[in-house]
Amino acid sequence: MGKIIAIANQKGGVGKTTTAINLSAAIAILDKKVLLVDADPQANATSGLGIDEEEVEISLYDCLINPDLVHKAVLPSIVPNLDILPSSIDLVGAEIELVSRKKREYALKKVLKRIKDDYDYIMIDCLPSLGLITINALTASHSVIIPIQCEVYSLTGLSKLKDTIMGVKNQFNTSLTIEGILLTMFDKRLRMANMVASEIHDMVSDHVFETIIQRNSKVGESPSVGKPVIMYDATSTGAVNFLHLASEFLKYNNDPSEVSY
Ligand SMILES: Nc1ncnc2c1ncn2[C@@H]1O[C@H](COP(=O)(O)OP(=O)(O)O)[C@@H](O)[C@H]1O
Ligand SMILES: [Mg+2]
Image (tube, rainbow, N blue to C red):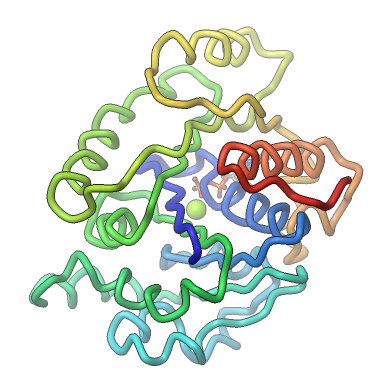
């Protein structure tokens, strides 16, 4: 049975999509079967894995309307062991259309139920909001990864996100946990980044991943060629960071990889 992990933070530009693409790819390379669900109408995870939005015939939006379409919607990616459930701009409409539905918080859970046994891990790339799609992602998930950018004010908004997570846990998904806080875009030359990185452990009571994702130009460039950083430049700092994160993640889940890198 696949473990489902939402990658969420209502702030934009904190590294959610980058984490979703590159952690999913690294876990897949460590020989686990992974599905990446693009739950952002911007479809950055879809395009970042080399899938042109124009080519997407059935998207997550269609699956939310008719969950039986999910098997047809899932596409293979260029990474072995990694599939994607693509997004499209139509997903904007889902927020509105779901509102009038009964059990509207469970729509994504219903979709993923049909395929979760096909995967070891399912990662959901959330959009930068705490609206109904994010609530659906949290309701469908076993846990949440919260990427936080190493910069001033990075912790503002965290308590609101945690309130939302607690709200979903209380109302729709009692077993939801925080998988971990992930420090992203760390620039060791900046004093502020060093301060945030060293203080975060004191400031939050949640699990914080030991691996820190550094700011790395290859990570920034790789979506424009439709590849995860590991397939763009396997020796880059970014690729190494995400492989470390993947193996830390698997160890934390008592599911170590037999593949060495
Ligand atoms: N570690 C990194 N090094 C360099 N650029 C990064 C890194 N992480 C993210 N970026 C860039 O920062 C921008 C925002 O990241 P993204 O993952 O799209 O954030 P979110 O999904 O939270 O909005 C993107 O242009 C992305 O390529
Ligand atoms: Mg994003």
